[in-house]
Length: 154
Length: 101
Figure 1 (tube, rainbow over the protein chains, first blue to last red):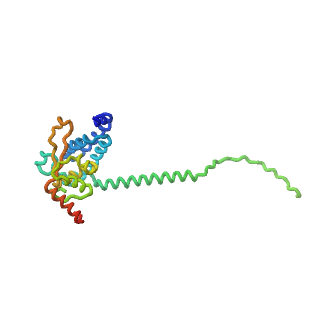
Figure 2 (cartoon, rainbow over the protein chains, first blue to last red):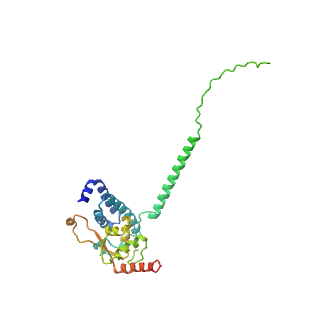
Figure 3 (cartoon, rainbow over the protein chains, first blue to last red):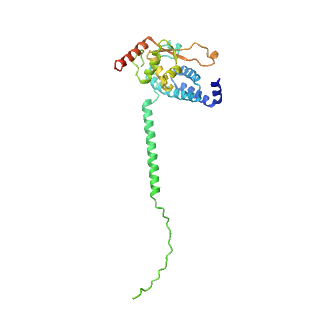
């Protein structure tokens, strides 16, 4: 009962979790898509809090990336009994990218670090430029007439 | 990994999953139950389960409930195969001998 009340108070997060799982399952290999969606939705039902459900959904998105990456290079056993009767399903010709997941993650991290470094350098140089600028406005001083007086004794 | 009973890359998470099943080799566990026992995040857990299944260490089947009656989707239940039990036992035995399989 408490789970139901908690879920009813947070329909948005529940909808987001279900949408994420549906989206993740759709991106999985065709032979696993429906199986994973039902399996993950069943797992989602067993999670009580909205945070855990959202965490599961995000994990499923990551799992899909890993599964797609692995299954794009190998043959996998069938997901359902119907498909299992046909034996293995070849997915070797499904190439989902130029880089592996690990390489892509590495490039992403390197890119973020480079962007952060460039941003810091730009900000630092700009700040330094402002700090070193003389804060002296150009003013035209009025000329003061100098009276030349003879020195005593001359 | 493509062939049955092929070698599985043994990560710490994979060992924890196998350990959960070795506690009672005949039991069928759903992903959520494995998560509860191991504490492995779903993003890591499900690829491991599929990897072990594709290697022939696990078999899986839907639980025998009607989703319309149960009011929830069916769970996918995983169980160690005899091959998986033998190989997992070998892996843990090799750890006891101090040799990484």
